[in-house]
Image (cartoon, rainbow, N blue to C red; front, top):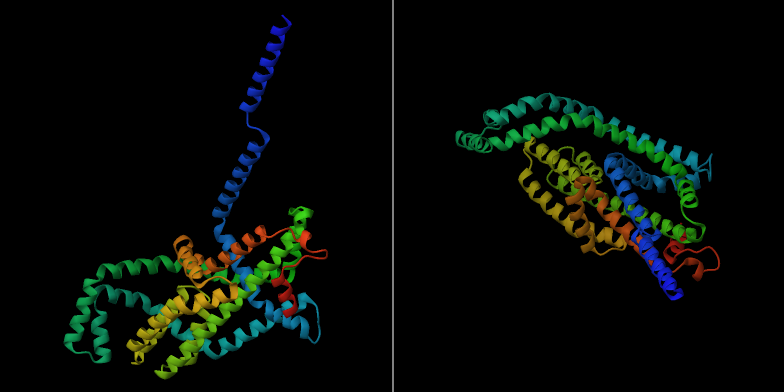
Length: 385
C-alpha cells in the first residue's frame, strides 16, 4: 500500500513536471519577446526611413564641418576652446563662402535657369512632335538630310520621350521637398556638432550596463574614427573630380569652365544624381556653344568608370580599412536595396558593421587594461588630434 502510494506520488511529480515543461519557460519567453521587439523596431524604422535618412545626412554633414569647428575652437581670437561659439563661427564662414560664390555666379545662373524653366514645356512639346529638328536645323545650319534623320530618330523613340516627359512632370512637385531637406540638414547638424559627444555619453550611461560601458565607449570611439575617415575620403573624391573637370573643360575651351568644374566637384557628394546632372549640364553647354561635346561625352564616360571602379573603392578602402572589392559589393547591394541613398550609405554602413563585429569579438577591455581602456587605433587618433 505504501509502495503504491509512493509510486503515485512519483507519477504525480513526473506528470507535474511534464505540465510545467509544456508551457514556455523563461528563456523561451525572453527569446520571443526579443524577436517581437526587433520586429517592432524594424517596422518603426521602415516607416520613418525618410526622417531617419535626414538625420543620418545631418550627422555626415556634421562630420564634414567638424574639422573646421575644431580649427576655430583652437585658434579663435575671441572664444578659444569654446565649442558653441566655434560652431557659430564655422557656420558664418560657410555662409560667407556661399554668398561670395553666389555673388560671382548667381546672376547669370538665375537668369539662365529662369529662361530654361520657361522653355521646358516648349522643349518637351518639340521633342514629342519632332518639330525641334526643324528649329535646330535652322539654328545650326543642318542639311535637309540631317534634319530628316534626326526627326526620324525622334519619331522612333516617341514612346520613350513621352515616358521621360511623365517622369519630369512627376519629379517637379518633389523639388520643394528636396529643397526643404537641403535646408533642414545643416540646421540639424548644428546640434550634433555642439552636443554630439554629450548625447553619445548620455545614451551610453542610460542604456548600457556599467560593466559593458568601457567596451561600448571603445566601439563608439572607433565609429567616430570611421565616419571621420569616410568624410575625408569623400572630400578627396570631390577634389579628384574637380581636378578632372577643370583640366578637360579648359583643354576643350568650354565656356564657364571653372564654374562647371566647381559644380561637378560639389555634386560629387550626391551619388549617381550628382555626376549625371554634371554630365548633362556640361554636354548641353558644349552642344549650345559648338564645343567638342562628343569627345567630352566619351571622356566623361571613361572618367565615371575609373572613378566608380578604381578610384572610389581604393580611396574608401584605404580610409575605412576595407578591401576595394568589399566596397564595390557594398555599393551594388546598396543601390539594389536603397537606391541613391543606399549607394551613399552602403560603404559607411559596411565599415560600421565591421567595427561592431570587431568590438563584439574582442575581449573585455577591463581584462586587458587597468586604466581607461582604448583600442590602439583610438590612441593613434588621439595622438594625431
